[in-house]
Image (cartoon, rainbow, N blue to C red; front, side, top):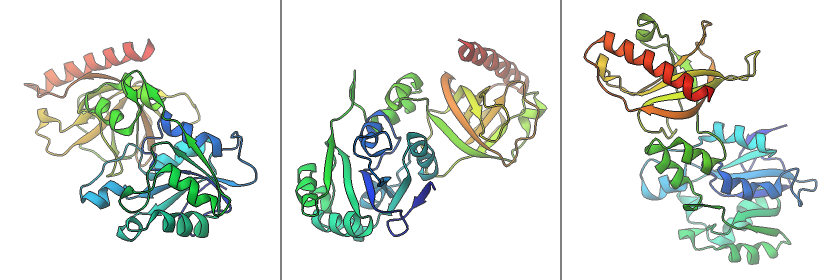
Length: 309
């Protein structure tokens, strides 16, 4: 049974991949691979990605940290990679104050019965991040736990990181984000009631409600592919998405609106996965609704062209 668990409710004993894994990007996947069913050290252990929520930086700095992959979305990617469970350690000041020795003994050994631990070579842990991977090896050896240290995954621009992905998305560089992630960036959200302005313009849209922690890319218009596991046809539906405040209609709140090509069925309350393919243009204010309608038509034609090719 696949699960999202706490250290108390997790299935045990475990083979652990340990880290934040925000984005589950190519570098993270290298750290996770050894503890999955296809990994060389899997055995009869429960493969477990052990991460923290809220993000440690949010607790330590007092500043909100937006996530490339909020917990539910992260869980879906990990399930696809062959991981048995996502174990979320509630991060607070008490956890932050644990020494490296205490973190291993209390969380990894006592709570999770870890037998194998996989980490990236730059992993740090314990109070003020004092623990190194060499410290982890030495401490874990006291309980006979094997530690696998994975080299960093690099690309042309250097080390693959969640920060690099955020920068690419902020710039609207979806191709770069895709290279770093190993897949297109996606938004996962529930379809909610909107103002239905798109319907009056001839372009009905699905308004998405996303987790408040979700990191959003550059405001503007995107070509997208949309899917839902419950649809009979597994093939994604092509479409166009607007992310922004809708200045032409004096919008004040940011909205995510998706227009699906050749679609007429009701989408309310469905959860959609929106795969961002290309950034088409920045959001801007038009002189009239007719001008906006003409631009939406042009955006749809551009999106079709980019998605087909």
